[in-house]
Image (cartoon, one colour):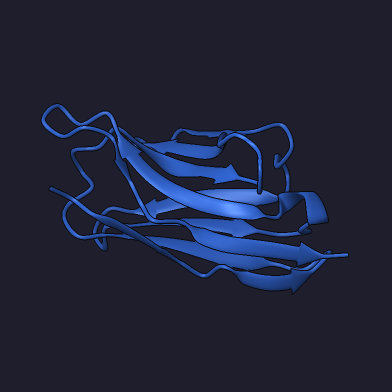
Length: 117
């Protein structure tokens, strides 16, 4: 079973940047889609960005133009570059991997991102 571990979260001022990393314990080649969800305190988890095996990307409207997702299949890593951060980006960010023929969707434990105004 592949496990995911996020890192890179923290406290940043509005307008700042953070880069989240998601490290997989095994190969990510078998997963068609990987990406990020986030869950603000007291709210539901929502999709942020997704990247497919062929590097097709999709973003939530609220982050388009500010966030960039990428994946490195050789290193089994997925990244989320977050620029021009806003207080409303504050949430726990979760990495996921989906679309594998033999493995159910995998989630990481989450990393907290806090943006101060």
